[in-house]
Every structure is written in C-alpha cells, then in structure tokens.
Image (tube, rainbow, N blue to C red; front, side, top):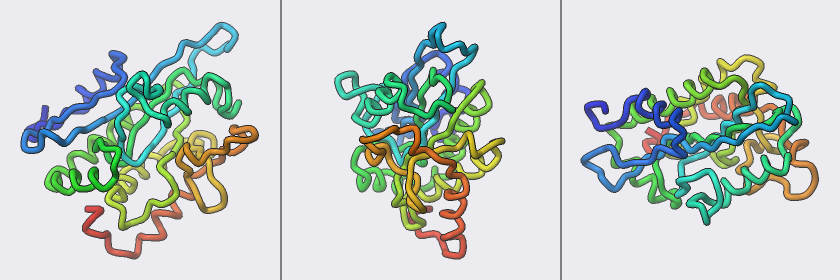
Length: 239
C-alpha cells in the first residue's frame, strides 16, 4: 500500500492476473465508507472452432462503477449492463473484426463505487487531496491492460453527456492520452454512437438489427470532445 492507503499498481495487477473478478475495497482510512473498484473482468474459454491462439480482450470504459462485483447479471452479483455485454459475447453480436472475445473488462473514468452519481460525486469531493494519486493509478491500470493483452479492443461506453463540468471529466482527460498512443486506433478504439453523439452507454445500443454494424472508430470524436472544452477553465467539480 502507498502512504495514503491506496494500493500500488502491482497489487492491483496481481489480483487481475490471479483471476479475481474485481478489486473492490475501501483503502483510505479517513473515509472507510468510500469504496473503490479498480477493475471488473471475466474470462471465457476459446473453442477449437475459434481457430485462434489468443482471443480478444474487450476493454470497456465507463463513467464510475455501480454495484457489480462480477461481470454477470444481478443474480450473480453483477448488473444489467454487465449481463447485456456478456450476452452480446455469447450470442456473437460484436463485430466479426473483433475476433473471438475471451476476456471482458471494465475500467472507469473515476473508480469510485456508487450507483447514484450524485452520491459518488460527494465521495469524490471528500477525497480531493488524493485525486492525483487515484487518477494516476487508474491510468496505469488501463495502460497495463493494453500492454499485457495479446489482442484488444477498447470500447468507450461512458455515455454522450460528458462535459467539462462533470466531476469525472478530469478522469477522461487523464485516460485519453493513453488511447492516443494506441497503434491502429481506427480498429482498436471502437464505440457505438451516431453523428457527434458518441460514445453511447450500452443501454442505448440498438436492440434491433445487427449490433456489430453500429460500432465505429471514435478516437477522433473523443479528441474533439476534449478540444471543445480546452479553452475553458476546468470547473472545481472536475478537480
């Protein structure tokens, strides 16, 4: 643990490699009711029919964690979003260009757990002196996932309403440079959306018609979103 009580990246990564479904805890002693979830992940075996030595790691980026402890449905301590993403994998609904997904993972713009965004924001505000350290750890987790994956697709899925006044904006600005360093971003950073309204949260993904056709490259859209607010002073809520 660091001096603040927050975990080191090697401790988080050890839990990931050992097959833990998530690393969720309350590491900051001053705020024992504030929970963090650094990742959520699930692996799937590949079959001989897949004809792939390595499967694809789909890495979703959300706003902040809700209550899921397992990448599954509610009956297994997951949630509706996780259940939907798993079913898309089981039913082969992701684009064929994604290959065979053998791992699904979730990271977030900010790793504070609460299904109510307003309450999560209050918790984030209490942790103000730790913001830099928390976001630096969060960035390293994504960077490590990319470096250690044989093949991956990053799927931004945090919704279309993010802006500079949102308390999670700074988390977005911290993660974007990691995405900008990805080679072949047009095939590795994909999301669902329409026009400038990207990325859709999975609850907005099309329920009729082939889901795979709804995905498109979105790095340029994410960069445009950041530029839109570059000239403005960040709100105290996002600090």
